[in-house]
Length: 150
Image (tube, rainbow, N blue to C red; front, side):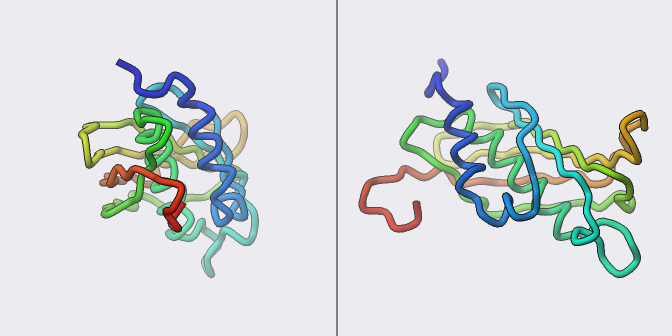
């Protein structure tokens, strides 16, 4: 049973409140029950010294997209906080755009485990190349009006 029928608005609100994610330029592409997809137009500020996308950018898009997928399965008064993640950087990310898709592997009462894959696209017609794969563990938290973490 779906815990929050308005889960898409819940996820959009999470993304709009995440200043760091917004500053990076990560945008929602698709939200469905148990999944989330995002994209990022690569700019010079996302690159490291060798001209490839910085690993921190790859980790951030994987982590936050995973959080979006987990949030689709929450009640309206709940949120998620990453408590652990492991990322494999499979190849250098180069090109015009990154695309991340994530899917919940296990949605528990207190913990969710989500897989995220980050792809790079050289241009609009290019075949996406898998650059990173992450497994993210998230704590499910209930927010109250007195919480200062919210």
